[in-house]
Length: 171
Image (tube, rainbow, N blue to C red; front, side, top):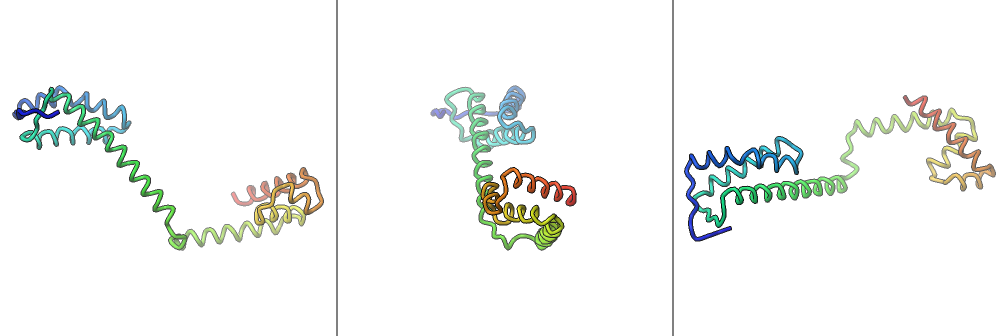
């Protein structure tokens, strides 16, 4: 998009260019971004950059084509930056040590665990045993059935009974 001839831009021609093109560029941005504020910011950035670089610009085509391409480039940069930012957030979350958990979260977890243990302890013996084998030891229904010499349907019954008891009492 460069030529040997400088692009001469007066304040009046810039104002007319802005008035004729800003809404079109905004619609283009909004179509891709679905965010009014981001769309406005990109359009402002395109025109600001165009004005600041006016003395150095060497356009081979109409300024409208240059501004449209600049807008598309900023939209692409927006998505690239957003993607990079999200990747950094995901990486930081994955690397966050467990020790960063707040004291309040640990206290609430401890209280909830104690309450669940209390509620499981109040269940009839076999129902509590089935629940512990399933949730605390991670055994499947078939494994529990074989270990306790009961049917899988009985295991399902005891799990359903224990989960209903917990739901009722934890609300």
